[in-house]
Image (cartoon, helix red, strand yellow):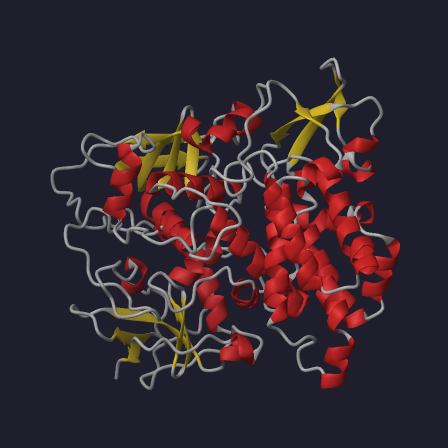
Length: 591
């Protein structure tokens, strides 16, 4: 088979979802055959034990949908180049998430705040809601992320499978299929279409049972749609279970595995993480303010921004042994041919120019084939230029060069990777600093946070901006709340933008505004967003009337300082008190 799926198997983790590739086509199988492997039977037995429903009810309401799901997804992968990327990966991942979600549910009293009688009365209903939300959480992937081509027994193609019309087993005269990934997929879109496919999997009486409690049903529907603002406790359980399955498959975490898996080398985890960040759009490409640009056979990425995002992503997934030094990561990528060096250095000093804009940036250079093996899966090329430039004699490569007006979108141009003696890290909630990473250079210079002036005219404002719900400051605050609720933003870690302190919540600035501006370029520059946020007057000023608060890192051998904006009311970021993380014990306000 010449499609992506064949070649991807060589880089998939060894385990139950890394099956040998077929000679050409993937056969369509019935549910019994798909669920028959020993490792899947073991998970099914655990699911039956954890649901605790009587035998006939379990077979009709739980096992029945699982069989329908298996028939629907067949041996499709769960991702292109991330977790469970081999044949059968989607089915294996889903069964693991159901199992993990039921384990988590076992330790929760649901609904939260319910009377004991109600909790006891609805125990089975909530358990069923957890199981079905876990089963269906990735159901939309075949509809929007993948392209499945159906084939007859003689190998002749009969067209593309339409998941909205029903499972491929219902298509007459089809015996096999091939699968590729759609280019330029929309991040999270599969969650929005899940509800359109539910009727292919769940029985009517199962849906009716869930709908018998409207509050629970509302959380269940929101969970499937990926709306974590409304998904409540149910959504949190599915997110946590999904994260456990992903981490285990990628070699992170220390929980027991369903089947043994090899420890993945660092370079492989780094490459997988880069592919994921690019695939999910977390490192945007090919525009002003992007994290990278694809030119010809090269992918150019903003050095510090890309590596910081990669490190944060891997740590969030639960990986251990991720280097705190950017130099170490560059060296690892270079040793395995993932990064193309500039002479003896990993960093390229370049000029990136597009229509009406130009910036001098430090980039890393990666052959496109190392990220996207299939030409059809690559995004479009940048309609501009990336031009390497030579350093001038008076340019110090160990220091950040002068910042341009656009530079805050990318971080400092040289970053800390070339610094021979990095400073001590921001301490975290897992112990004192041990030579990890320096506090981000973004913390050291906070322009625009002097006492507010009477003028609101800020360069970089989008046309037609005005006060109100759509104001950039209000949008920033809503974004911050969403990111914190969905746990997509680190808290109290060396690279966190949010730290919980005794006085409230510290927003590391301008870093957090740069993050927002890079994701929402139509809302204006980061300076403008920051200015509009200050007008909301939800932050605490210092006694001298300035806005920047300084916090010292306790326990550091060198003096480290974190600077930012202080919010006294933690509910501005964490909507529910029980979700507010503990105070970071390593930060102390500087008097």
